[in-house]
Image 1: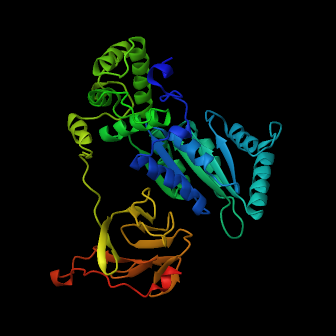
Image 2: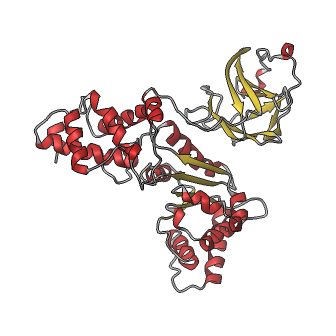
Image 3: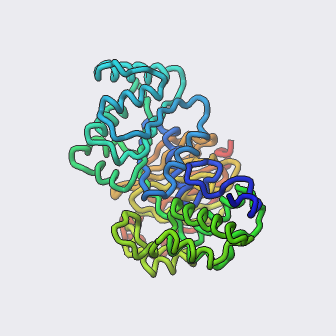
Length: 421
């Protein structure tokens, strides 16, 4: 192989889902944060969709690798199964040998096990990959499992990951009850041009490049044109290019090497392919991606409200609120990042509908405060100021257009720092 030629310690572009090579684009970080949210919420139910090869399985493996010991996981990857086979697969993952059990016994065993583990202080997570293959009958079993509860709360967190048609199944009229149980949905897009370049360099660095140039700078735009930013296609092209360059005794992969690989793979440009299920890229989108911008023909969602983030009496950030969910916390994976030791990794969230906005604490260490009183859950009203550590959030409701220009929001005065404890 080419490891010696390029002085690498391992293959950088293997197709296997190795968490060590995970590159967290902004979208991948968001999807991972949503998976992690199933641990915060007793009724956590998350659906992650994405095109073939976009990195869903690698994200799942990374999420599972980082779980604490008090989390018990059932991971199901074989999804072209009957409802009984699905229940058997879940029990096998939990350590049972259920192959002679009838359905009623399967359900009773699962129910007893989940409640027993919950009472022992453990969190239980069911992860189903390739969930688009599940039949409506099996998805109904998933709904019933999601409803197992004690007198206080649900006992099973669920993550479904699959290709985009999973959303079509979940939106079918006969699965409306299941769709209502889902707390979060997220679609994982392909990488932008700049993200693709960083992805390639990241994997080379993990493999031992130590900053050395292995792909010439003029390769990346050509790679993007033929892969569309899809990680699996990027891996295939880059691995083949390294092998071809090594065969020709090149120390750096050149644009000519990429051109030769494209001919060998017999690929057409990604944007022009017919019959592919992968998201097509228009020339305008390719141009926008090369500058780190996003192009879309869809109108932006209507902004129903705004929040201003202030510190020391100065406004430091502003976000509009459209229908959906905005997560606030210390790390860059959040929708609004607050870099402060008083703020937890994922501190709180704001859920916006056409009727209301609700702020909810995500089991943070220091909590959220309204009028110096710690709150867990609060329906936001125009002008509310929520204290988060040493920062304040001012909520501005824009559903009503009655605010005069003279009433424009001013920088927020800091509240007493009793929230810092």
